[in-house]
Picture 1: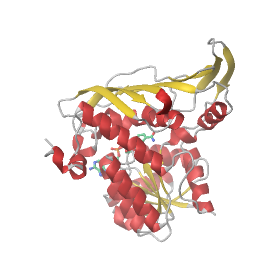
Picture 2: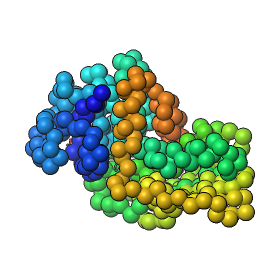
Picture 3: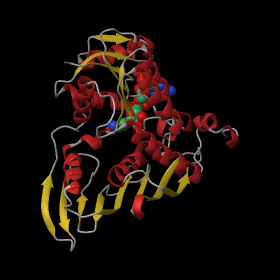
Amino acid sequence: MTVRWGVIGTGGIAHSFVTDCSATGIEFVAVGSRTRESAEAFATEHGIARAHGSYADLVADDGVDAVYVATPHSRHAEDALLAIAAGKHVLVEKAFTITAAEARRVVDAARRADVAVMEAMWTRFLPQSVMIRELIAEGRIGRPRVVEATHHQALSTDPQHRLNDPALGGGAILDLGVYPISFAVDVLGTPTAVAAAGTLSDQGVDTQMGILLTHEGGTQSVVHFGLDLRSPNTASIIGEDGRIDLDATWYTPTTWRLRDRDGVVVEEFDSREERTGYAHEVRAFEAMIASGTHEGGAMDPEETVAVMAVMDEARRQVGVRYAADQDQDPARGPVD
Ligand SMILES: NC(=O)c1ccc[n+]([C@@H]2O[C@H](COP(=O)([O-])OP(=O)(O)OC[C@H]3O[C@@H](n4cnc5c(N)ncnc54)[C@H](OP(=O)(O)O)[C@@H]3O)[C@@H](O)[C@H]2O)c1
């Protein structure tokens, strides 16, 4: 079965994703934009057959089986629900939504409509991530006790840019922090406690944050991230009998090594790929659609909701508030 993909949004990641995935034979048949001009330009550039001048027209396209949502976080819930209501499977860019409550609404709607929904947390589907899960399951590092991961990038300082605009879900946590948080949850499970500290911009979004997560059995993860400076962007999983160290940039196809409990390298891996690596998540999602099982796999929707809940709590502690928080908890008062 060939899945026919439609794309919502024509921004930066939509271009990278379609370029990367098209090169592996994934079939894009339509694109929808807020403007017809942008949809047509995108369709022409990527050889896509149909260009729609609205997201509603894209989801109404009978020739589309699955929709990829590539809009700012603040629109993800609305755009995913639009696609689900039209009976389409939907792959939603990270962060899945703004809040856990929004994520819950989307996941429940997909269940009711019997369509597949997944967060496009592509790192979890990379061959290196699959191998790492296998090595841990085989006991090669013993019981994992600590995860360390960072994600800093020096990004746009333009106040209008979506990353800096609270109305569009700006800030480091939803864009960058979601990677190490999702990684920690993948390895150690849903946290039982969240302790966060951070710095806010004049516009009220987090420019920098550090979070200590406590997981089942007292295991811990330490993640930090920021959007206005660079860091090595490395990660480690530390077990009782060894550890796994991922080089920069850990959340992309990279080099990494397995060490014994004394820190001696046991095995070295080079998982670098020619392309970015977005196609792995798409192939996994297509396999899920083909099998008729709409949940489970490397990025189960319930785990996405759990990651969103961690981010809700970290934002609450640091003081990052979006309009969607008001819907979730009116007792918290109006958004500034
Ligand atoms: N997986 C990854 O590696 C990766 C990398 C970067 C970003 N992302 C995620 O992808 C999403 C989009 O990021 P991006 O960097 O591609 O953003 P972007 O370049 O700003 O593009 C977002 C697109 O969304 C549409 N849009 C709808 N309402 C909008 C609004 N009010 N303001 C601006 N754009 C609006 C626009 O497309 P139309 O004009 O065509 O409607 C726009 O081009 C984010 O959730 C981000 O976290 C993922």
